[in-house]
Length: 484
Image 1 (cartoon, rainbow, N blue to C red):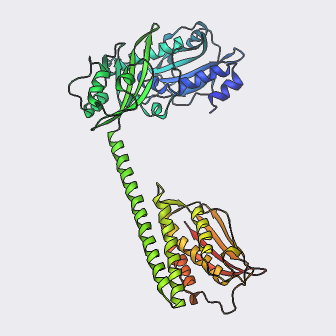
Image 2: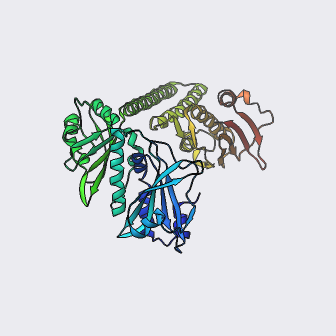
């Protein structure tokens, strides 16, 4: 189905400003479709005056549709006195036209000219099923009256109203809650859903006949809102806001209505979002609690690391001191993950930052024969975001591999330690490579506590695979494959 831009560019002679006006109209015409219980089709004139093109369409959410198939992109040739052509050429609102469909049903069609800068640039066809004998309800009459006023505003070039629209404008529907006020701000009609929302806010009595801004101000009190209720609900200009008190929260949108060039009141859409806001507050509270837990775990781990470091300084046995220092590094790698999680609003962490910090931190404190300054760390590729339950054991794996390489791989000349990552969706292939002495002939991973930890974490906790390889030209590569 072609877009309005496609049709305007290739089939019409409309200007850029004309097309922008039509875009503003179709972005806000769901309200008119719902109020009138009708399908709407926007027709634009052919550039060679041979007919009209259907540029856009919308179906109502308040009733059945007459458009069983999409019509946007179709062409209707000139047919003389058809309502679309009459509205286009005369600028008049044409009503009362009936078309009979192939299945025998009869469709009422109104043609509303779309005016901009004193020119007719298109026509909105309002299509609805022929009314039966049933008398319209008070709610339906209120809807249809507001739809009629908006249609007249389109004909006079007063709708859509200028200005930017927020996401709130698209989230509110006529069925959520509907209030009609007059030019003085007095409520002429309030739908049952609107009354229920105001009851939740604390209203006692009826809304009809009251000054809506004053009533709402009294219910809200001095609690802060996006704007004052009187300003939002006055109807002097289009506005959107959230109004709340201690018991309820309402989303509100005000659309000014004009008749014969004068302000005739406003159409107000509203929705009760109290439960939604309560759930959001609960989620924020839970999220803050989880981050606080990670922060406290990080602090506790740092305390453990400090105690181990203190004990190591008091130990005279070199082997015991080395073992305690390795324990400090292992605890520190876990603390690093919890520190990152404590600053995140999700249970996921950007693991590239953790990997880079581990590369530099472990090498900086390394006691290998070459010294940390002689080993150059490099990282290629990206881990992306990882969940905390994977980030923690993976950080320990990297700590052990970096420490093992810095302690055993290099001589006095040092070298380069490379961390290469390849992630494709949920698969991660990781290679930690050094250009040092390579694996000894009698290499056995189980003979080293650090490599035993690595094997257990990769194959047990992470469910991945692990391989030790000799590099061509010298050095060692540890290849790890796992699924996130």
